Every structure is written in C-alpha cells, then in structure tokens.
Length: 319
Image: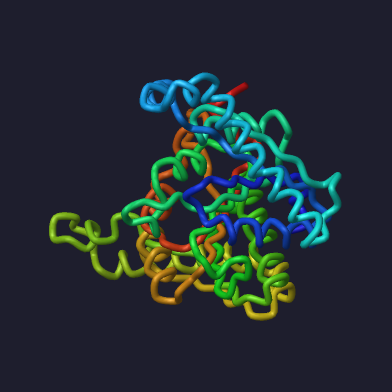
C-alpha cells in the first residue's frame, strides 16, 4: 500500500464519509501520503435556476457561488480536524471544490494532479450495497487505482480477496496480476486480514464438447480438461510463489467455473469485505469498457472494491 503517495479523497454527501476519512487518515500515516479532499457541486443549471426561482429575492443572486463557498468551508473544516485531531501535517492536506459531472470532474482532477489513488465511498441508492452507475463509470474510466468503500466496517479489512488471471504469454496481464498481488498482500499485512487469492479456470465450451452433437469422445474431453487444469495451476503457482510469506493468513484457490460466477459466489459465501482486482480495456478501445468478467463482477458484488489498471491504460476523459 506504500505505493500510494498522492491520494484523492472524494467526500460526496451520499457516500460513507466517516469510513472514507478513517481510511484516508490510515493511508496518510502509513504511507506518508498527501491527501486532497475533493468535492463536486453537481447541481446543473436547471436545478440552480429552479432553486433561485423559488428562493426569496435576497437569496437568489449569487446562489451558485454561495453553494460552492459553503462546500469549500465544509472541506476546510474537515481538513482542520485532520490536522488537529488526527495529526496530519497541514502541508499534506489540500482541498478542492469543482462543479460539473461527478466522475468526469474526479478523473480530470486525477489527470491534473497526477493522483495515484482515488478513495471514495459508494454512492447510496435504493439498493446501495451494489455499485451504482456513477461509481461504475469511475471504475471504468479512471486511469489510476480506485478504492470504493462499500462497508461501514472500514477502515480495517478482515477478509480480502484478490482475483488473478495468470497468463505467462501475456506480459501486460502478468504485470497487472503482480499489481493486484502487491496491493492485496500489503493491505492484508497492514490490516492483519485474511487473504484469498482466487483464480477461476474452465475448459472452453466443455458443455458443448460433451453434447451429443459434438461427436467428441468423453475420454478426449476429460484429457483436455485435465490438461487445462494442469496448465492453469502451473501458471497460478508461478505467479504466487513469490508472495507466499508476505501475508501470513493467505490461501491460494484454484476453482473450476466461470470466473464471474466463481468470484461473486466466493465473495458472498466467505463474507469478503474487500475485493482487489485488475481491469483492462478491451482490445482496440480506450478505457471505455473493462472486460466482460470485470464488468459482471462489479455489477454483482456488495463489498468494497479496489480496482487497478494496467500501466498503459488511457482514460477516454481528458483535460
């Protein structure tokens, strides 16, 4: 976790602000990191015009500026509290208020200030335990790692899951797997948490190969299945062998099944509170989509998620 030195802390009114601040303080002390407290005034012109039209004459002029100033005052008070009560040096806390679309403003701030982590509480909705559209957009498009807290038990994780997809012939995926392992193991150590490293494997179209119309002998399918399992297990061992002694309570799981199903089921069964995973842009596209498995998992899980991107990831949102 010490790789995060320049952290953007999103303080949205509907998120888990107490959990976000507690984790931000923890990261600031553990990493000697700088914190930027960030808020977006998301009221559009239509909303502001409606408010102005329904306020008394003295309240209408300059409404947008006054709302922004109030938001800035809130951040300044929080920053003052972090310096006086939590012992963070004043020169390591900044505050920024912008106006616009939430995830776009956040990503542009990341690009401007070269933040290496975004820390945010999940937006609460009717079923707020699953991630909403704004959070998913941020996870899809933000170039730096994004940590969305979706549990009131933060800042200390107890059950962490890291998902990996070993592929020795794909250097980008290998580098991304190592990023996931480095972040997950260091978080497990610092939180004294249990860590499950999970890799799901399967034989492509096994059910069709075993069907009556494939004319494939069962013994051949069994042999293919065993070879797929063997190669997958070897690749997983190669990836994880250097991480065995880092986090004491770590188990490496090699589970047969479709990845999205295996990951979400394990998260639910084992009451995982923090999922660390890597995402990548689909081939030929710039950061808009993050792969079918990642997209499905992020739409299903109800725990906190820490998502990392490959080094060459380019956001579709620019300055």
